[in-house]
Image 1 (cartoon, rainbow, N blue to C red):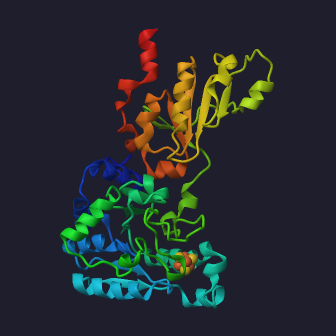
Image 2: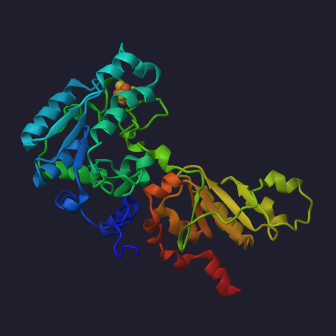
Image 3: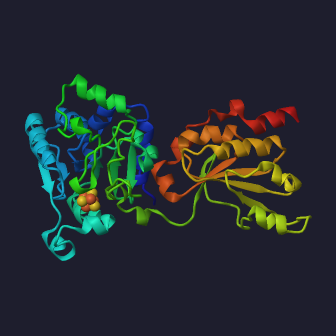
Amino acid sequence: MPLENPIPSISQRVTELNNRHRDSDASVVLRDVLGDALFGPIALVSSFGAEAVVLLHMVSEIDKATPIIFIDTEMLFPQTLAYQRKLAEDFGLSDVRRITPSREAVFLRDPDNLMHLADKNSCCALRKTEPLEDALAGFDVWISGRKRFQGGVRAEMALFESEDDKRIKVNPLAHWTREDVADYIAANNLPRHPLVAKGYPSIGCEPCTTPVSSGEDERAGRWRDEEKTECGIHFMNDDKQTPDANVIVNDNGFASDDWNRGYSSFEDIEAAPESQSAALAIDLPNDFDAVKLLPWIDQIDLVRIEFPVFSDGRGFSLAQRLRLLGYHGRLRAKGHLLADQYAMARRSGFDEVEIDQALAARQPEPQWLARADWQARNYQHRFQQSA
Ligand code: SF4
């Protein structure tokens, strides 16, 4: 006989927590997490960097004995080490755990401490990701200080995230703005990392951190002039979380792709015979000239428009143009879209969005379903009304 109240999976709990705390203040989230024994062992992971003081202060106000994991890569600025000791003392944090890379692994893989010059990803794995994985082994939940305004992959992160359905990651400051951080620090008269005043708004290892000029992104000084933007500790287990199939998002939530007849390019269609009888789907780049599709506009069943980056809105314009030119088939936005952009996508004429599994894990179904106010300016709705 099935259990009447089966224990929810981590993913189910994460979905429920994101719903419950949709509008919660960071301190409410922290009190809920730190005060509920059902969460199991919890640690705060802190770099003791430029903005770390906010979460450390909040946690110290709730429970000074909370385990604080501090990854000392042995490449940090001496000011960071001094700041770590000062904050632990000022806030009365009684369980700061300084974690260093494995002596044996460093001896074998980076005996001259020069790996960061040749292979930064491997260096971060050796000095950050692997030690953190070991340190988190006994914890069910960990707390991170990332914020969406920091951009990159952080721009779309949820308040609660599932790590491989084994551990929960909490980002209580996910929705905070730069001003929120500054206000909290000022209101509580908190000590800043000494390098902030010297032009370092984001602080990591000494060889990989430079000051930032006025007008630059605040993380521009991290791995400057490299494609790398994250050390990797926030991608732990991502390889296990990312199966091949993409997720289709529509007004009913998540679904799998029901189109199994392949996608053509515009060049394929141009080269094809004039009368197309088979069902047809086409992939378009977001800078495509919609007018070129006019000869085939009634023959195409599905148009899929690429969104290469979150900030590039040309796909919305192309969708609107296709609808205005009379395209009535399915229209899908594929790639880098946020749940926050779903209403915009629907208003632009898209029927659905296609995202990869990693994004679906970070932005679960309820976040997309919450954006249901698109109908007021829905192009198809207006077409239906005027038909
Ligand atoms: Fe190595 Fe630089 Fe990564 Fe630090 S930030 S672990 S020095 S590559």
